[in-house]
Image (cartoon, rainbow, N blue to C red):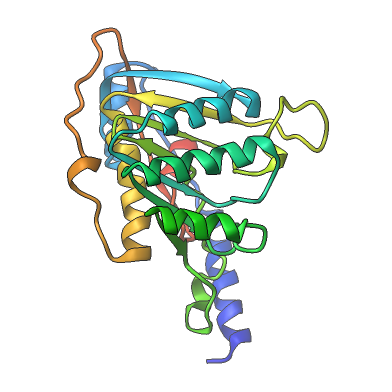
Length: 254
């Protein structure tokens, strides 16, 4: 089959998927126990109790919180992103924190999208990270025999520290996300910091992508026992996907 035919088939498949709708009869009230059970049944993701969640707005809040957490790491740092570009002081501090912790013996695992990050990544930083003992892996490097996955990228922006503190949201590591959205060159974005049992579900998203890229599973220090907080809230982590078609997140929205 030629490339043109393959492309036409994929476009037709994607249009068919996009046209599919979801219908919900007698919807339960948001926040009710039944609502939580509905979400679990749709996604297979459990609602975790006893979590603490802090919303972080824009780079001025997001990057200092992540860097502080990385610097506090004693055992593991697991990080994945679509975009990691060279930048100024804030971006440099993020990379230096990873290097320092790897030098200190912390197991640092970094997964970067091979399309989103490769062109503008600081290759000297990659070299220093590896020399410090960190594992830096590229997700789905373009290849002629993986053309069907060429546009299916790693958009899981995850940072998990010591298996106990997790960050996720929309921010990439680049100068555009620094600051406080003060001008068109500095972008508005939201991240969240999570503590509690839901962190393990964030790690599960990282594990899935990491296993594809490396054929390895993270165990031991990455999986500490996590107790919930008595004053914590319910959190459900729903994974996105690097494939096309209906996803759990799409079902929750539509």
